[in-house]
Image (cartoon, rainbow, N blue to C red; front, side, top):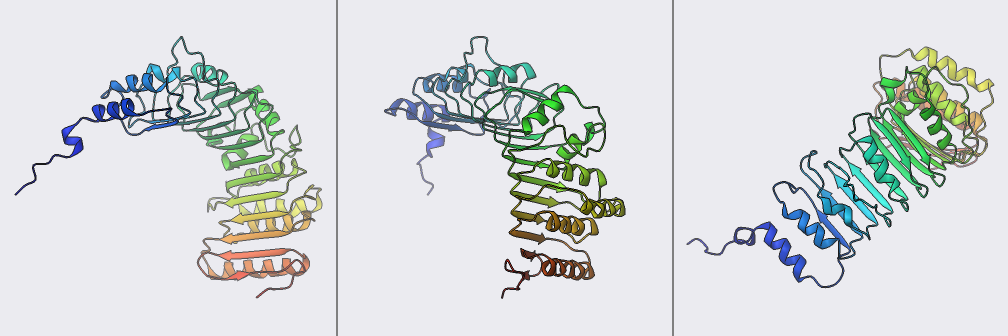
Length: 377
């Protein structure tokens, strides 16, 4: 015999369920999350947001299954928001939008917004401290940011231009973008503005695409500004076989005299002239590279190629205060290359009294040394 009982969802619509929850709730609603709901299919969402806007909501997250879903009007009437997360939506600011005066964190994921609208949105969040933008869609690939209290800025996606009008408190930045297509263009005033902003950072995370951005108009040896405040640098997908990326990486490192922590993720490509990069890195041993404060280095996804090993030797030579070097290998095509890399590291241990850790993901083998170069058990 089949049960005559119906599920809650069969008996009531999702709209009526949410209405009942909202109406029966007593007191403030601090956090509200609505995920994978078609805003056009559920026009009641704007009514829910209108209701919530009067209940001191501090954290609001809205996901749409489609990126062309226009944000409901009442989203822009919240006065107490501290964290706003929007994903897969289309933003058009209403003329009456006064801003989010208490907003501290803004997350935008796969959001469609015009450059002028983005500029206005950010400028009307005067307390904003943290911003995370992923795959932003606008017509010009342009971001203009006026956020005097911004401390942390993260971006990933395609970008042509970024300009910080006011970001004097910015200390941490993460940029992962395909600058490759624009690396042959001449530097612009906005590019110089970004490099100037980098000078106030204490932490920077980026990738090989950003290094190509630094190479606009040529291969730099020195940047026009020193990054005197930068203490932590993380670079991912660096192709040591490509001379342009090697030069740009060293340029960035050379321009950061107070660097204390360096993390690099290597990326291997067979279509490159390794000899040119290798000879360049060997020649740098005779040049001044101010790394006297660098203490910790981690290089991951290393494959034992000659340019990678020359880079390791260069760091050991120039980083006189280095305490720990961690080398992580995830793929080495030939056992001979792995054996050669171990030999080179052991030679470095003999000549440099540093702690060196070698980790091979494929083999549970780790080589450890103490600060005096003695191998540990």
